[in-house]
Length: 175
Image 1 (spheres, rainbow, N blue to C red):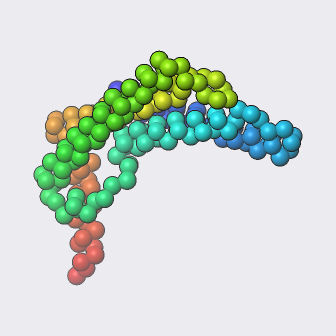
Image 2 (tube, helix red, strand yellow; image 1 turned 120 degrees about the vertical axis):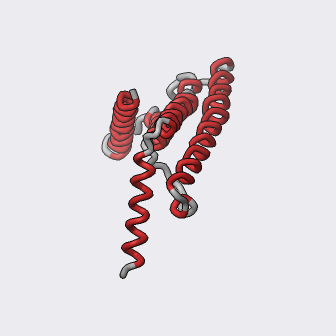
Image 3 (cartoon, one colour; image 1 turned 30 degrees about the vertical axis):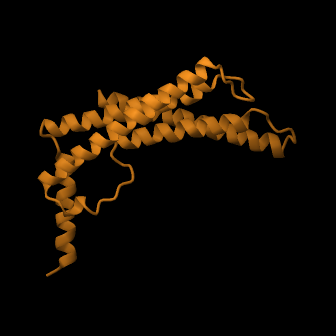
């Protein structure tokens, strides 16, 4: 299931990024070549950038490729590293739930009820803000999947990181 979610997310990111590039190229072309700048491209580029950024963050969270400070992690044994990873994943789930899903869902609801429209495209802002709760749900799915994998004893990625650190320390220490 996770591979399918990864593939769909990657495909959506590729599509949105391609659309963003085409949109910006059209804006530059229409402004400098045609001397008639397009009216919708600036707003569309802004919204596409929001969607690409948040969806990219959710995808990187699922790949465990997000920015992290690993000073403490590198000094822990494998067992302690697993406990720390469980704590971090739990905190990420709580943040995604409260801020992105619940807070973002409330924002989507409010903008939908008050029918706030975008200035140029005239589409409901609720559709723009919808990426927050969607990405929150995606992050929660990824982190729950990671926790389930750790609880089932499949924490090979943590063991590999641990072995790499031990190898680096022995190389740095030298003979």
